[in-house]
Picture 1 (cartoon, one colour):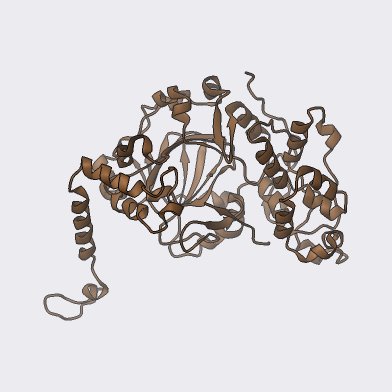
Picture 2 (tube, rainbow, N blue to C red):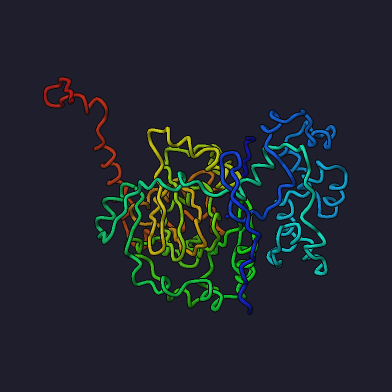
Length: 484
């Protein structure tokens, strides 16, 4: 299939929509969800053309001379058009009808024009039309045309990623170390210092959120509160309505860094786990970068591969639902992920499902396999600094995550903040240029001489690392030694 990439640099209770049930049908080795709601207008994968009785592809005929362009290029061009132009273009030919009705185009129009002030209904195109004209019904728009003999890997894969079930083989690997009743000292020595992930169990037993936080409770507390959802702000009520109705490749994710300020009472229901209470960025007070987020999302929503900001470490606590995690150490870039040399941009598959479909199998052949697990409600994932990680919700989920800096990671953060392109790399703060000096000065004022001590300790640790020749020679007699 064609390679598809994007750039990263994230009063009435809504009722769940009842979708028409369909029998699961294998599609190119994948099984579709029980409810297939998104439209593909008859698009087939390009490989099917080889088995067709004729070599006719209505895509090429309908596009005319533009058929030489890739599907991505055509959609990039159409992304410059407004709603009226897309509608007019859809009348030109069946091929332009398919491209002009590509739902991500209409998603962009809805988010750009209406921000979070919309009520999602059936599809992004219908949402746009019904927002502009409330009198327009779903029946008037219909389900759209089914175009015969239209072959496109790009468009088909977009539809497939929105509708396939997660394969069991994608979920069954669980090779992370799980620890219960771990002491703070052991956490530091065994995981934080060696920069190693761990799944912590039993450390949220005193969280009221585990008992209280569900949809009903959050709706009671914050129904009309606007939260950050992708590039827009949406009320919690509108977001839940969207999450119940949508079936798309990249579901919008509620990821809000100001939830405590917006709903202060939520802060009473949880506390930072004991392992992460040394948070040196707190020395900056209100000038610290964004550091905590409320996360809400439906099944299949999540975060594609990224490294946490500002070289911080993080913890992620699941309150409701469950999440599949895949993590790669700092020195291994995940397959299909292409960071720029300066680290400012990362090219990666368009969606999480696309990565699983096209790249997950490769990792099984690697000598150094990624760390994988499913983190369930009441468990906490520790994500060390610099680790690439992908997260996908396996069901409707609620979580809290926080980035932090401890003395074990202080030097890494300072190096990151003073890098030549820090103004492009630093995130979550308005003052990217001066953050290094502000943070270092604040730390030195509170812990005089500590940075120098940490630097000496790091140099001593580095000097203790055994070289290859030291490992095969006897230092006392100067002769080789071998062990079998």
